[in-house]
Image (cartoon, rainbow, N blue to C red; front, side):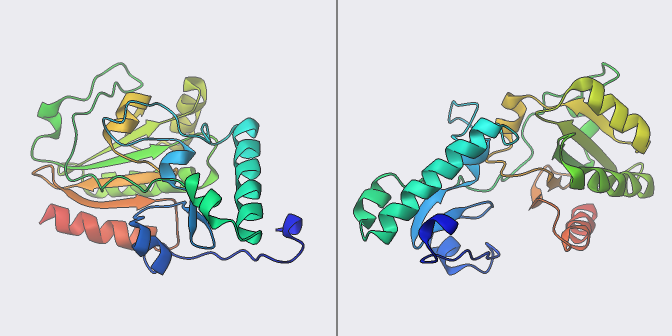
Length: 238
């Protein structure tokens, strides 16, 4: 914003209430606009939808300093074009929109930290929660601890899978041991992440009912996460 000389301001909107997000069909976050030009969507920050055939977005991995600099340079260029009145050039380089939400539980290729693969048989008839997280994500620890409590409350009806991405296995094991949460911890692969669609942030939580139907997807760790996810879980348990 400083580079604009005060000609631009930064606005944060909830994508569920954003007219721009609805206009462009953006259903997840983060999505970045300069005026009404879509600069970046969730897939640009790390994961693509199923079948798109790419492992990384333009600004992935998220924790990379090079990715941050690439995003900053692209954003500054788009801002300069829009301020100069050249929206045609800005739109020529604009991002495409998100993939549709995941409708059902995909096949899961996850081996837990004890070397046991997650099988379709053990998930059959259960409510399945899949949490994508990373060791470098501070809110993820709190979310994992809360999911551990959910698992303790529903030991026979719920399976919580905690798939770590962009993380070292030794750090994942350390956090698992520190938390003591009764979750199935494993190392998430790019293929697994792509199978779950357009992941936009960590933590990302998916809730599936006993028939494998999607009951909710939650991105990040907003204050409303626990209440909304537990409401989705209650519906999935019915």
